Image (cartoon, rainbow, N blue to C red; front, side):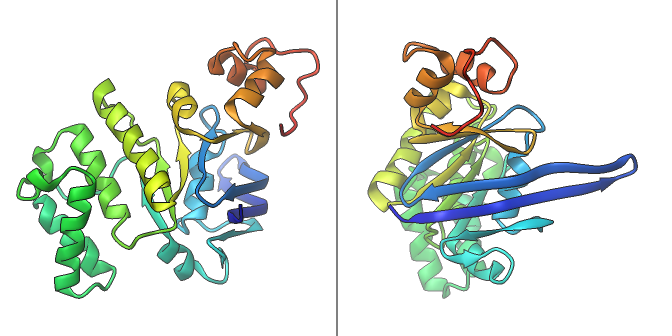
Length: 261
C-alpha cells in the first residue's frame, strides 16, 4: 500500500531556560493508506509533539515529512486540507448546538451554506448524532462530545485522521462505541488513522500496526503480535509487558535490541 505519512529525520528541539530539549529526534516513520497506526510511548516520549508537527501546529526544527503527498514545510495548506485532527481537550463550543457547530465548521472549510447544512446532516447520521443536532454541545455526555469532535474533523473528508488520546475519561461503553467508529472510518471510507493512546488495550484492539517511541525516537515498530513475540517472548505475552520491555521499564529478553519487526 502507498505511504500516506512519511517522515525522515523529523526533529523538534525546544529552547528552555536550562538548555535545549530534544522532544523529537531523527524520527523515521511511514504510515500506509487505510492503516490504523497506534503511536505509543511513555509520558514525554514525543508523541504529541510529533502529532502537532504532522498537523502543521508546530514547526519542525529538523528533518522532513509529507502527509498525503504534501510537504510539511512547503505545502502546509495542502497538509491541512488532507488532515483531520482531534486534540486531547476537544474543541467544541459548549454554548451552541451540535447543528450550529457542524455547519460552522463546514463554512470554515468554505462550503456553501446549503452544502454545509447537508454535510452536517450526513455526519450526524454517520456518527449517531442526528437526535442531538439541536442540543447545546455543553449538554452532551463525554462520549457524545468525542463523536462531535470527530465529526468536525471529518467535515472536509480528510484522507488522514489524527486522534490524540481520543478516549481519555470515557466510560467503557463510550470507549467501545468510539472503537467501532474508528474501524468504520477505515473500513467504509478508507481513512488512514494515526492514533496516540496510553491505553494499551485500545491500541491492541484497534491498531493494524504499532510504533513505540521513547526519548523522541522510534524504539520498535510492528504488528501487536510481532512485537509480543519479539519483545515479550511469546504470542501470549501481554501488550503491557511487551511495552515495558521495549521502553526499558521492565524485564526484556536478552536479545531485545530496539529494531523494527
